[in-house]
Image (cartoon, rainbow, N blue to C red):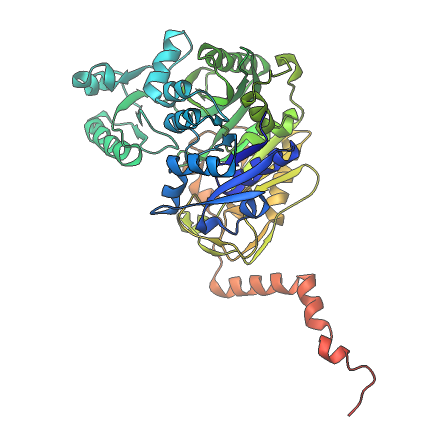
Length: 490
């Protein structure tokens, strides 16, 4: 059993993990770069260890430093969160060699499922559904011709990819050669691996993923599905569960397929099996993420399980202690990712100091954030500030609560995408449960929103300032020095 756990991450996920660990009675250590020294996760941790590197990101990716941080602090386990080293098999092996537990799957599982080509081949050989494709590794010399034979439209993917980087849709086969070379360069730049594969592109696809959890005793369950179809440039920005696309029979089928894939690889810990879902009800294996997902809170909201707690229990060797029948869905949950970006100007990142931060609250509202007032937000990391998660008895109620929560969010000093997210939630395609992965690009003009003139912006800011009760009270109050004069007269 662990007494102390090191968190090898930052921001909202570091704080979210930390609070669960503290609730379990475990001591916490947060490894951090100097730019995060005043972040909430570092300030709330029992201990912190500073990491050094040529860049902040390089520091968080330094395996040797993190192993030494565990030795120095006495941490018996590491929770990697998501991103950085969460799906790095070498990190898991280095911890294992040092006698430190990696709170995640085994390193061989990470290697197998982290390689899109190997994972796809593994899944296909076990008769789970995969889209028609051409894999470069099978025969590099004939790769382009085999891809062309699939017919348009095609989707090119880097074998080692993630986060949508390097992916390209090809509708005109005359540009296939050029697009393959572009994707190869992007794969090499982002992942150090230019290997590719191509598959038939499903028109107006939806993105459905299934949360799974396995223990070291051979038991595995799923926690139902999430829909993550609302994406901008292959990056998810709104997620929900249950998916409005699925009938009960389809939900059962896709969740059982995901659980079957995870059982086939003898999966341990938390993972997510992702599928592309077509308009005709067909679905194909996309990939498996061998870690906790950004959108895991919506699953927690409808099932009542703390997935981080379950990860820790499994890593300690405990059995799950429950069966599939014990995991039910209650109501509907939606997560919106609040980014420091300007939606009116091509979503360019916004940087600066957080002057005022008042997250929303109310029935069914949860906010996972890793920032505080006065903290500086730069360009070293992903621009996500917080996740706003809302639960309702129905999907309509979850949408209404999400819109209100976004409207109630106050963050001054940075431009955020809060109003853009609210417009997406109120768009007819989303409201009616018809959103697909191309919705944001297709409806860009409708979602753009009005751009205020400078004079109108000044008026809006003045109105907001004058409506702040604390400010008005301060303006109207008698200064302390004058109030202390009492009955004195000159």
